[in-house]
Amino acid sequence: MHHPWLFAATMLASIFAMGGTSMLYAAAMMLSRNSAVYGNFLSFPIYILSGVMVPVSYLPDFLEPLSRLVFLSWSADLMRDSLAAASVPNAGWRLLVIIGLGATGLVGGRVLLSAVLRRAREQGAWTYA
Image 1 (cartoon, one colour):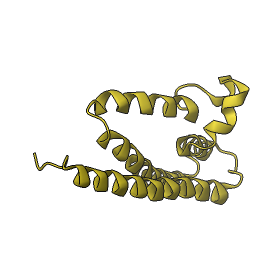
Image 2 (cartoon, helix red, strand yellow):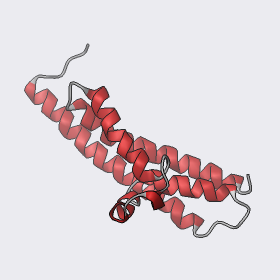
Image 3 (tube, rainbow, N blue to C red):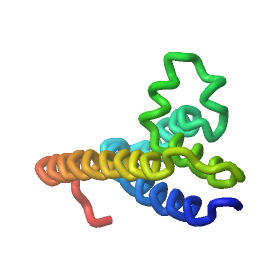
């Protein structure tokens, strides 16, 4: 590992972004009775678009801009670059993008989650079991 501090910073930023994205998933899961099925349905496109399973260059051209909206694509690219011996271009900017996408997911997830919880309380669908 040639850039261990950058790798560690990318891991921390990715963990934060995962938390934000999980808030979005949580809101979607609360709306469904088949949350396990929807969880798989929602996570698989993220893995494809991020370039983790298949390189983004193999995807159709119209999907490349969509892959840049997924924090995991930025994280995977930055982690790969931190393992190489060459200097990492725009490392600070790329870390900020990961954190920004995570913060966007966190804010959006918080808004959606509060709306879903309010709806559940109003409909009397909230249980403690």
